[in-house]
Image (cartoon, rainbow, N blue to C red; front, side):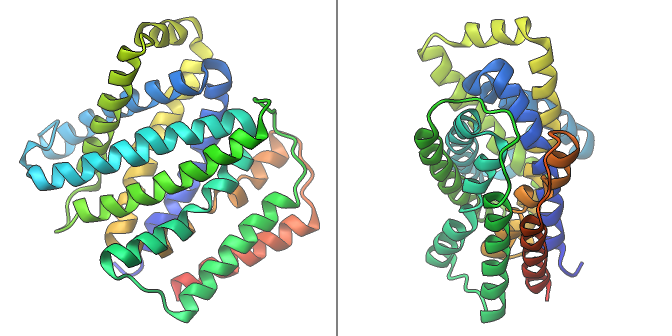
Amino acid sequence: MPYLGETAALVTAFLWTFSAVSFSNATRLLGSQPANRLRVVLALAILILINAALYAQPIPLHAGWERWGWLSLSGVIGLALGDAFLFAAYRHLGARLGLLLLSLAPVFSAIIAWGMYGETLSPLQMTGMFLTLSGISWVVITRPEKEPQHGTDPAKGIVYGILAALGQAIGLVLSKQGMSDGFSPFAASLIRMLAASASLWLFAILQKQAAQTLRIARDNPVGLRWAILGSVVGPVLGVSASLLAVQHASVGITSTIMALPPVLMMPISHYVYKEHISLQAILGTVIAIAGVALLFV
């Protein structure tokens, strides 16, 4: 299928937009670390059911040690560490500014993929990447913040956002290595989520926070519902779509398209948070869409 990777990346952007809103609400009600721990274990349970239904094998034990190694490392760096930093950024900055910093991931991804796989971008693709990221940045910078603020330390939020972008970039590149020979995105997502769940919950047990996380979930049913919704849309469907994307297109291009959520959040901010959409934001959206169009040429 032509442009399968780019199309999967666009689907990922839409899914991550809705999951960002869900997890922003879950983080506010549950806290960043409890929400992150619940997210991975909920997603793991759902992925086990999906793999059992699709392949009659709940856990892909046939994948081989090398593939398990690459995908597990990807899960720890991209999902456990990277998303922990992203949740902390959401708590301090809100979903919109957290996603802005996450849009640095394509730059990191392109550099790392060039170093590991020799992936290069044509001048037209680099132009599309530049336009897309410029449009995204313009949209976010020119929009007033109407979204509820959750934290009191923006400087920490910025550092967490940059670390989240770096973690996502490394995770995507390692995933591409682990998904060679047409390996299933749902099976790859399960391996990554299993590694992330094990690392996050082991750390929680060592810090004696596992029981507290379960109590927080029990005492905050609304926050738990937001976490469940976000888990289905983001870690299950969104992450699987992102793996399909990097499997069939270059990491730099797909990660650029997947950085669109700040633009896609505009209607949500307008109708949910009653934010006025300025002419500058609309122009930034047009620039970002033009850049994505070049990436499909």
